[in-house]
Amino acid sequence: MDPRTEKFMASIIARNPGETEFHQAVQEVADSLIPFIEENPKYKHAKILERIAEPERIIIFRIPWIDDKGDVQVNKGYRIEMNSAIGPYKGGIRFHPTVNLSILKFLAFEQVFKNSLTTLPLGGGKGGSDFDPKGKSDNEVMKFCQSFMTELYRHIGPDTDVPAGDIGVGGREVGFMFGQYKRLKNEFTGVFTGKGREWGGSLIRPEATGYGTVYFAQEMLKTQGDSLKGKSVSISGSGNVAQFATEKVLEMGGKVVTLSDSAGFIYDPNGIDMEKLDYVKELKNIKRGRISEYAEKFGVEYHEGKRPWIVKCDVALPCATQNEITEEDAQTLVKNGCRVISEGANMPSTPDAVEVYLNNRILYGPGKAANAGGVAVSGLEMTQNSMRLSWTREEVDEKLQRIMKSIHETCKKFGTESDGFINYLNGSNVGGFVKVADAMMAQGVV
Ligand code: NDP
Ligand code: 2IT
Image (cartoon, rainbow, N blue to C red; front, side, top):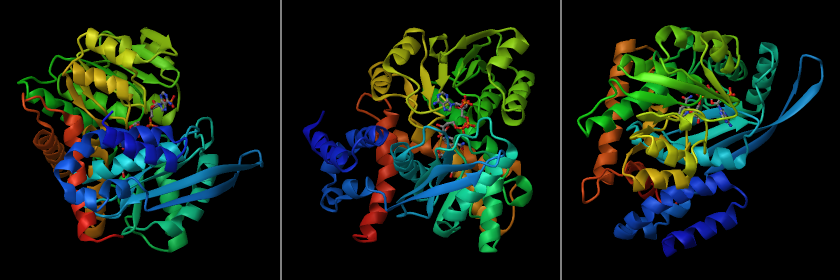
């Protein structure tokens, strides 16, 4: 490790003890940024890197609620308000039993750079709870969401902090949280994105992250005169991002052969077509079932307790969770001929896996670039709410495509190496940093 990075990371670890995911996210960015900052000493003198790695504010609170049996339950709630240099705090809410301060700080940190890359005026934040929506009734989820918002409402607002969905938070949860906010504040504003279409939501927001990840893969392939047509694609996850990534790959003429959930993955060598995808949407979004049921229904292989990276593919789209591709998985993917990784999830590849991609010079689109389509359309939802009008599907999709192309251009601008190889990791870190850093410099030491 560069000794300057080592010194910086030692201070991060000392100030944020035990937060391993946060350390991982900061280190990845520091590796890209420290050489850049040496060449641009104004950022060094203003201690921008030290400031950008310290959240502006963290709110931690108790969420008491009563389950269907009448028993009292208690969860922890969080909102990390990471950086507001270029716009109101913006980022999703995650409900998952593994949620803790480290995970939400890594996500909020990533969000700052991602949101800057979108070209829109969005600061960075993230929130969530260790609440597990699995196996809970609609009534229990509503009770929990209402209690969560009864505390959070006083800290957020359409010009202050605008949450959205993430793992475990989709249209149902956004509805319950928005409803409670509206009741407590007595105002109808764009305080949340990912709202229902009839009450202020943007068309294409549900699709945006998955579509954007595929648009980004297509842009990367284009640099080599290639496309997704005819490519075999492995996807992990089977939630919001995985479903719409699958849909867009099919539209672009690719073949999706895997999907997964936390219990295992399915391998469908004939490809998941639109009809089978409709089954997955119903299974996951309405019945809230397990992906193993797909294997039973369509008579394909189900691999219990395994991740899809052992399957041969041309393109891999990790769309489940952090650190789901290890060094060994990455080596298997590359050995089997995979040439493109576009990350729908946040930080799905371990640092060792990323090193395998870069050493093998494959097309690697890191999450903060490749999955920025979701928050970008959230930004467009905020614009439509402010104007009190809504754009058509075509208008939003056209803007999403333009934004994904622009993110690709930014990565190319800041990440092209002397031999022409595009290091999208460095490109997205430096490209995302500059706008936020310049805004922080202009606004003084605040
Ligand atoms: P969903 O809750 O809709 O789906 C999550 C999927 O990932 C499920 O299939 C889930 O399986 C699986 N999963 C979750 N945790 C784990 C785990 N620990 N191990 C294995 N599988 C797991 O979430 P999203 O699709 O919205 O989010 C997926 C990823 O995309 C996350 O990394 C999120 O941060 C990122 N992302 C999401 C955006 C959005 O707009 N929603 C925007 C940008 C990034 P199971 O059902 O078994 O839990
Ligand atoms: O990780 C992410 O970018 C999201 N979960 C979406 C954030 C948003 O505000 O739409």
